[in-house]
Image 1 (tube, rainbow, N blue to C red):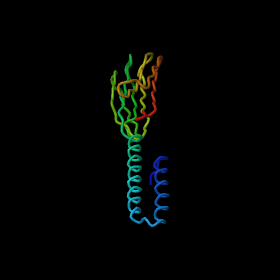
Image 2: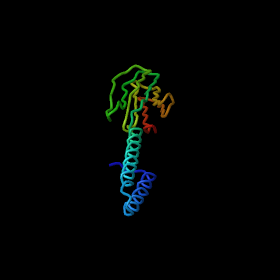
Image 3: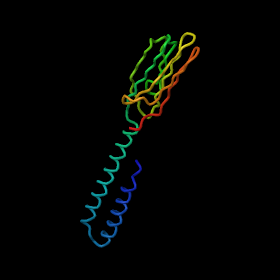
Image 4: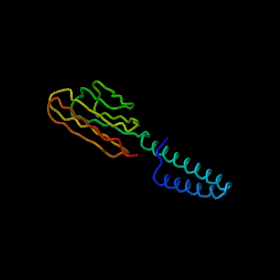
Length: 151
């Protein structure tokens, strides 16, 4: 059972107290109304908790980008269900949009294949860059890991 919010708990407590007082005073017809109201509040609280859980764990899309001024040795990225996908010798520029969920952390890394050069990785959410790294030098690797967005 989901934990009820503080306002829902207050309403339930108030309704239970009112039901107790009135039922001991002989208001049996009121008992049915109180029971109905309590059920409605519980259902509303459960529905709100389900919506919040879906929002927190719902799917979201990110786009990975890799650019380089040299050939790439590899690109690795989180493709969902906590699974990393590895690509050998992809052509730069490289771009991939994936759907993640359950607060999975978006991640992409790229490694240059030859000598000196520059490699950049980016993670975009709703078109905005949320993480970017550029590495320069010999046999460089750029690694980007971001927090899952707040939905």
